[in-house]
Length: 399
Image (tube, rainbow, N blue to C red; front, side, top):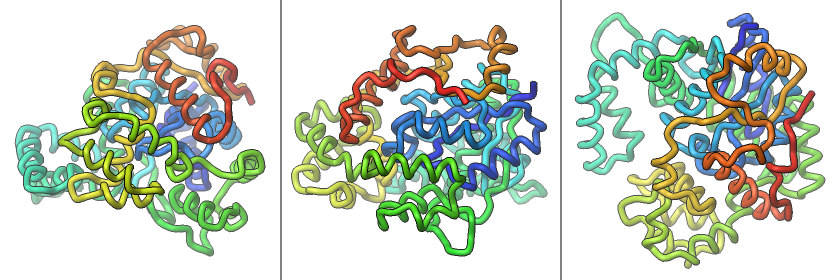
């Protein structure tokens, strides 16, 4: 069986994701699609719109055959570590291909960019360091340093100002750096950009645009054309039960409490908190009754919205610098769900996997898994549901 892997968040799953799965199958002749999916907190440092089991059901209904959880330490990390976790899990699962969506649409520019940056890595890092010291944010500094390296030749290099291209580069980097057998391919993103608002007359919109439209209108009707039926029904059922979707605005009272009960020294011990920003975080939490107001006070040229949100995620989930530094390589494969086709793949290939498969949370005390369980509990409490220990109670979903 040819296995093609994808690293996803599905926040929520929309027509663009469906297009990506179908095109990935077509381009690789895949017999099985394996999705490595973030849990309850995401790469941009925010809670998932709906829980990971609902997102798993939607993914399985729309072409994924296996859904594996990307551990918290990778799911909430900067792009290089997010990609590293996903790629290493796909390698452990014996995937033949890794397919990612990009604005670039061709794999060769990513391969050429990787070689360029590897050949000039020392120069790149020196330039990035100087540019950060001059006041640029890290993403701005990295792109500026990269642009200075691009030679005037016949090759085409990836445009690293685009969010999916940046992530795509890091997928290629991880594939090469860890000498995996996974072959990277990319699918051209169509119709909507990463942060674009929804546009009438189209059928594909960004997940960001879809979430914003739902939150603004308190309705799903205006986004129904951008969602597969399984997503629309699942979101409708979720809203009928919970009456809201997860967001930092909803979680703000809990996050604010988490900040204000801590000293500056304690906040500085949490992952990604640096350079004295803990004092500003505490002061802003004292002054601001809502999350958006808090973020406007803390955000600056040096600290991007995403970087601050990742700090806040780690404060909220009690994830420290020490834990982050001890999270090197994934130790297990956490199974969230499977189709009959996925189950067949497991039966045929499981003995070849280089990491153990965990289908029952109670069967392991791995620190990475315990952090995921802890994050789930806090997510559920902030959502307003007294559902503790759900990771121990919900078995892998089967479709």
